[in-house]
Length: 347
Image (cartoon, rainbow, N blue to C red; front, side, top):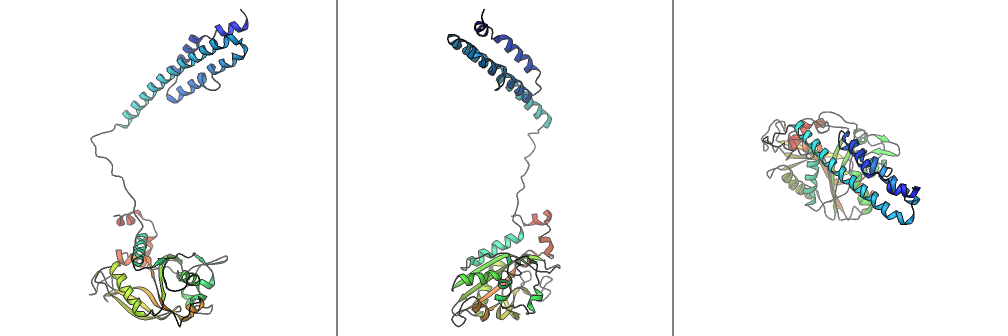
C-alpha cells in the first residue's frame, strides 16, 4: 500500500475519539476541559494537523479524506459541548450549595449617594439668581495680579491686600475672589450685564468659620440707573427663596475697594424669626454677604463709562450659606468627607 492510500485509510477516528474522551475525564473543571478541547480542535490541535496531509494525497482521494476529517471534528465538537455543559452545571450546583442562599430573607437595600451640601447650596443659588435673569460665568482659578487686584481698585500698596494674601504660583496666583471674573466679562461684553460668578477661591485664612480654600458666589449688575435700592430689592427676594418667606435684609455701612458705597448685608435669623437665639447670638440678625455700588474706577478700568452706567456687585461664601442653612458650626466638616456627616444630606 503506498503513502497516499495509507494516509486516506488510516485516520483512526475511533482511536482519536477514545483518546480525547479519556483526556477529558481528567479535567477538573470547565477551564481544564477547554484546554483539552484545544489540544484536538485548536489551531495546532491533532484534528487540524490532519488536514495538513491533504496536499500529500492524489486529487481524487482528497474529497473522501476531507469528509472523514470533518466528520471526526463534528463528533469531537459534539462530545466536548456535552461535557462542557455537564461541567458548568456541576460548578453552578457547587457554587449555590456553598452560598447557602435563603430565599425567604428580605433583599438588601441598595445605598445611593447624595450631593455634597456645598454643591446643593451652589445649585440652589444658581437656580435662584438664574430665575432673576443672571447668566453664569466661570473664570480661571489661577489669575494674574491685574485681574485679581489692580483692576478691582486694589493697587500694590493697598492695605486691603494684606487681608487677602494668597497663594502664589509661577505665572500668577490662586484667585482670592471670583470678582476677577466680573472684570473679564465687562471687558468682553458691554452693558446691560447681569452675571453670576461661582467658583473656588483661596486665602491664607484658617479657623472654625474660615478655610484656606472655599467657594464663593459673586454677582454683578451693570446698566443705566442702577442704585443701592435695586440691590436691596434683589437681596430681599434672594433671602426669601433661600431661607424663608419671612426673611428680611439689613444693610450696614462697610468698605470694599471695588464698591462705593459698600455695605455688609444681614439677614433676619431664620431659626428664631428675629427674636434672638444662639444661632444669631441674640441679635436677631446674621451677616451673610458683602455688597455695594460698583466703584467708578472699576467701570473705567473695564472701558465702561461711569457717567452713563452704574451697577451693583455682591459676594457670598457658599460654605457660609450652607453652614447657616443647615446649622453647621465648623467649616472643616464640609471638607473632611466624613460619611456619617454627609449622609445627613440625602433626600
